[in-house]
Structures are given as structure tokens and as C-alpha cells.
Image (cartoon, helix red, strand yellow):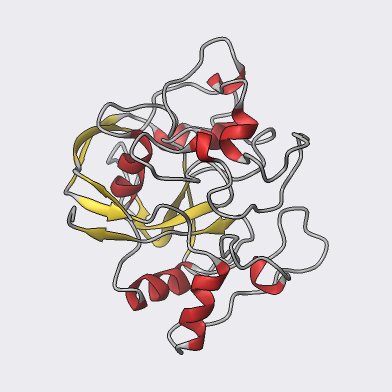
Length: 244
């Protein structure tokens, strides 16, 4: 795990996007989080298997055949070091509890990705003049050595930590790639005009489809899904309050 001091930071993004892709991230505002630790990478298949073997976790959900996005890693050979996916929010919460941790709050997750100075991407600032402000080496920062041919449409997961160039300055990996990640937070409108939806939980981060959904690489990007949704595009990592 990486220890982070927490504190006040700029949360959200006021960017106007063509199709409203970042609308859920507006308006930007000051948020705070206490010191915490967060997993360096997403929870792997092997780690989740230990929880299943201990009787504390249930099996992931096999997705129907024919979906374009990645297969469920639990059911594929040689994926032990890939992120576990196809797990519901309840399953991820159970794992983190078994591991003596918790799912990160939305504030923890964004602080880990942006740092105290509000960088737009885990690795640093936006690059003006480029599509979605992404650097030209976005493939190396998201997929790294995993899909070295650099084709646009690689939906499959990678072993965790395959893209060290995408690390935050503090050393957290895979926040903009591999799979998106559940947080503990219910979906709340940043404007405060609506009540928080307790039936939904926020997920964060990007996945390996960096070409089609480039806006998801932004550290402020957020989505939400029902507690019982299990998606091949969503995994998780755990956190722990306290910086030591």
C-alpha cells in the first residue's frame, strides 16, 4: 500500500465536453480527506481466490458470451496476476473487509489520482492541443508492455502494474487503466441540488479502451452503478484509514 497524507484538494472538473462525458464531475470544489493508505494496484484474481478459499468471498459472475469488453478474468487461464472483475459492489466490500481494509471513498480515490495540487491525470498535467489532453505516449501509460503492438482497440485486461509510466508521483499504479474501480461512496450530485442515491455506488478510473473512451483517463471522471451490477469493465482496490 502507499501512504498518503490527505488534506484539502480540488475535486471535480469543470471542463465542457462535446457529449457531456464529464458532466457528473461538475462543479469542481474543494474536498478533504484524512490520511490513508491505498493499494498500489487493483486486487488480483489470485488475491480474490484466497478470500474465496477462506469462505469470505463469493464467486464472480460469468458474463454472457459475445460481449466485446474483456472476459471475466476469474474464468480465464493464466490470469492470476490480472485484476479481478465481474464482481458486484457487495462482493468487493466483502473482500476489503476480509483483508482488514475498506473500499476507498470517492475522495480517497480522487486524492490518490490527483494529489494535493489537482493534476488532471495520475501521472501529471494535461497536454494542450492533443485529443482529450492526453499525452502522445498514452498507450505506454495505460497498457505499457501488455499490448506492445499499440493497436487502438485492446479491451483485454493486463497483469497489474504493466504500465509503470502511468504511476502517480506517489507510486500508485493502474488508476487510468486496466479496469475501472468501485468506491465505497453512494452517488451524490456535486451541486448538492439532489439527494444522494444510496442505491448506486460510484466507480472511478479508466480502462484499457483508451482510444474510444479517452475521457475516462481523467482523474475526475466518475460513473455510478447499482450495488448488484457485475461488469467485466469494473474491478477494485482497497484502502485503509491512517497514513502508516
